[in-house]
Amino acid sequence: MTQNELIQALPKAELHVHIEGTFEPELMFAIAQRNGVAIPYQNIDEVKAAYQFHNLQSFLDIYYAGANVLLQQQDFYDLAWAYFERCAADRVVHTEIFFDPQTHTDRGVAFATVINGLQAACDDAKSKLGISSHLIMSFLRHLSEEAAFATLEQALPYQSQIIAVGLDSSELGHPPSKFARVFAKARELGFLVVAHAGEEGPPEYVWEALDVLKVNRIDHGVRAEEDAHLMQRLIADKMPLTVCPLSNLKLCVVNDMAQHNIQRLLKQGVQVTVNSDDPAYFGGYVNANFTTIAEALQLSADEIKQLAANSFESAFISAEDKQYWLQQIAAIA
Image (cartoon, rainbow, N blue to C red; front, side, top):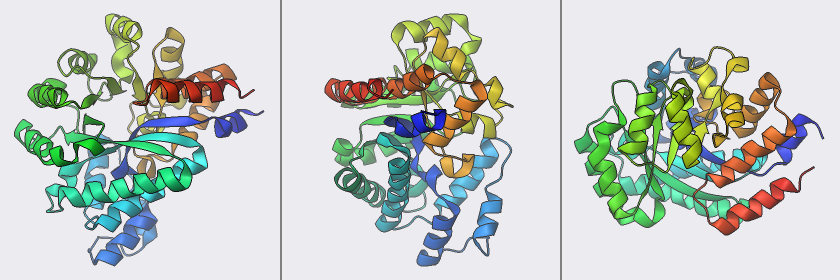
């Protein structure tokens, strides 16, 4: 079995994907036309050309502009369903999807419109594609603590549909500790918690996510390698890192995929996983991330299988489900 055949055959869980970041240019253009929303592009090629950026903030500017065309429950359904079809193609059998309600509610779109559209797609993915999923509500860290509390309040009627809360958007200048009280309240209410840390931000942000927010997972976390004590902590606690290689390359967290540290982290015993982040913008879904690092880092079959196994070990699923998928992975020669 070739490297690519192995990657295709392995069942995988995706734990770090922003549903708004799966918005392919063709679908964006179609929904803009359907909703009569003016966008500054005359055709799909112009939309594709706009999907160019040079750092996290310039990406976020385009990302939020694209989200403006999402207005109706059907829009959110279509967005999520297109992503689930990509999952099916990549043999992603479980996914935990970030959504940013503030991106939409701040535009006057009702919270219910967003989550009901996404949940309907999740339900159909389970019944039609056999893909299980959870929704993770992320707070936008460039906004205020007060705004995050308001969003948490809006989410309470839908708590049974939201497995966890997260923290995303511009990292620099917005440390996890800014949201300490919001996360404390979320934990008190019974939500699991995750947070982006150690992508553009320093290792200190990872420490804060661990000790202040008391997260169950770290999203990104690649800069943790700069702090030996932090590395020891991550390994000892079996703290998952949801790493996004193509995203790291596109946003210049690394300048060459051959220099990416995911293999070093894996060899040291960190529970790293492979994810796509914002695949419509960063050039590939889960399998593209796997194949790119496998080739660039000359990953062994055992390393590839371990990364797939880590995705289930790190997922918010039952012990029985974890064991089932780990057995499926082990059975692949």
